[in-house]
Image (cartoon, rainbow, N blue to C red; front, top):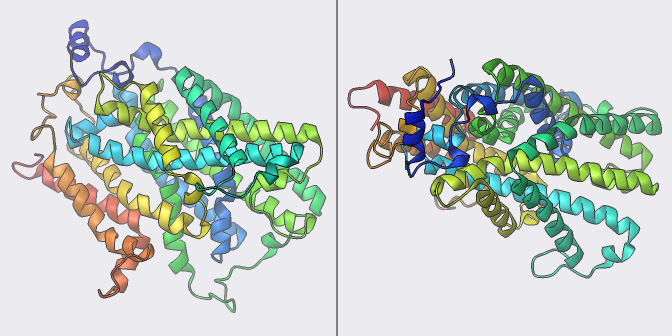
Length: 496
């Protein structure tokens, strides 16, 4: 049953320095998200350009089309489990991710997982904003060819027209953030059916124009008997699967930021189960099939859907495509990469940093990270970016789930979560157990990460076990943290 605060309890919370309107428990009358809203949330976030291009990394590594799509589907089924579990507390208590972290990390220590999650989101925000801005640039260049001749890249590595299109799309993102959470919910509802329809239309066009889906769907796996990488499927599959989990490992932590608005547990569970795995598999298949068809239609494969759309000559089609791509990227970016860090930054100083200011901070950091350089090397997309931060976020998820389900049995003191001197203060606001567990759970994956990014000291031996552990980065971190934290809390004098 949803806890309802009494007037006196509400007054106590509102007087706390840990309180702000954006971090407050959502009252029952404001919890309006049903099954459809959560399904639309995941359809909207999954139907985007990175998902379209996701399978290309797997096919490039040697998988055939169905192995790639199945790996994506399986990874999303697995990540759905912590997603639904972490959403439970948000739905029951109406609290966002950083406030839930106070129960396990302490009222001050909660800033550690919140900021780790926030900085990953800033990177993703920059990447998605660059994708949206670049889509605008490429399509406008068809109408105004002078833009494509905007000069050589400057000190930033991009031309002035690219920079202006990037800033324009960045400004649209900031405007939506300023409008607030209800505007975001409306945007997601609009985008979900629009992008599925456009994806299916693109699929139908490719099939008709190419007389089939082309060579990629008939290409054998490089891991099949007699092929170049015969017998090495598991060596590629395991880190690839971990990378697919890493794709949404961020949202598996901060899903309470959305589930706090759910009407019921049923709404968030069914909505997420319907919206996430199937949409990811469908949209990645559309990407594979359309790309395969481009080999026949244009004579070479084109993985970027923006480049595919620029091949059309009808002005109306190009304008509709530009608007659709902007809406798609905007909805995904705001929901996946702004809501959480905005709350996380607000958690640093609840009385001074609002959701809107937190969103602005996210946007500024996203620009400073120069996202066009983050995506310049597609070979590192899975094995460095996705796999790397999954090693960091997996332990946080393990600690949160262990604390809420195994230790507290879903019982939280809602008032104490906003009390700097309450039961979640631990040691001067920090849970030493949670921080110690987080550090130890990340440690086994650190050597593998350093080897992968090629900064491991040449004079040191690099045992194969380090690279093998890193292939399982999210699983290793998650399970280690789950066990260590649970044992630490049930032992005498544990939980400090």
